[in-house]
Length: 332
Image 1 (cartoon, rainbow, N blue to C red):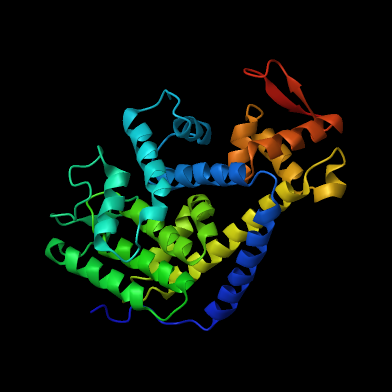
Image 2 (image 1 turned 135 degrees about the horizontal axis):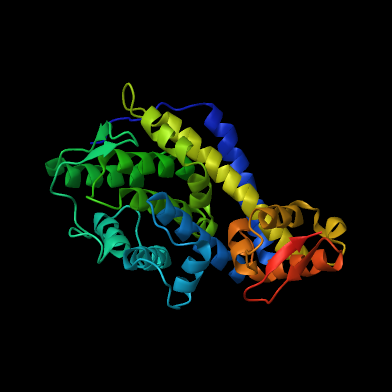
């Protein structure tokens, strides 16, 4: 039986209510979004890129998109395999039961097949988690206890009275704390929270929560550590994840609004300058970025980025120098 492992924070109630309201607005926007499938595809690619990048994968967003299209990529075979596996695991979300141990193991197998010896099996060795300085900051549960602890966690989750937003965050923390596998624990923890949330509201299957985690990895790992010391209390991590989920929904809502509204030459009047400003900011940092790369970074569809680029060129904000394939952008 899993003992109580987090202290409930009254502040969560307000954040949960805000997230529920955002989910309603985003779901309504999706119904009128012009490029809903493209937007979802772009978010999936960005989610996979972020989740694997957190673990050290070197593939760029464009390379992840190429892998998703089945195109060859010049990159380390292991990195390509990690991305292929992650795409397969996210594609299988609809078939997974978040409270079934066999599905938990199947998801790990999808994520790690061909990469680790114990793919789809609980670890049989002791593991230590170390920081950048090589110091041990956490030791995973004893290997002989792992199977029972995960079974108890999933049983607890299936019966928990708290909101799925809280339960999914708590489960994510405890998966990382138990560290049930030799490798792939971070990926399975993030995937499992996405799965739990997607069963509550399907839109979460496409929500790029991992993107924000990737952008703020230090805060992610600090929240995990704060929840372990001095005693186990997942409240800091739950609070952190609720904040990340809210931010991800706000970003998704902005992207859906752009797609739903459409973009004309007068970008500022039609949709505001947020997305065009973000495009010019990214192009200042890297003028070689393609429309696909910009779309993945911004969480919008490539078609939306193309419309913005056309409008910005027509307005004299930027121009293209060189060929479409090897050229670059110049901001006037």
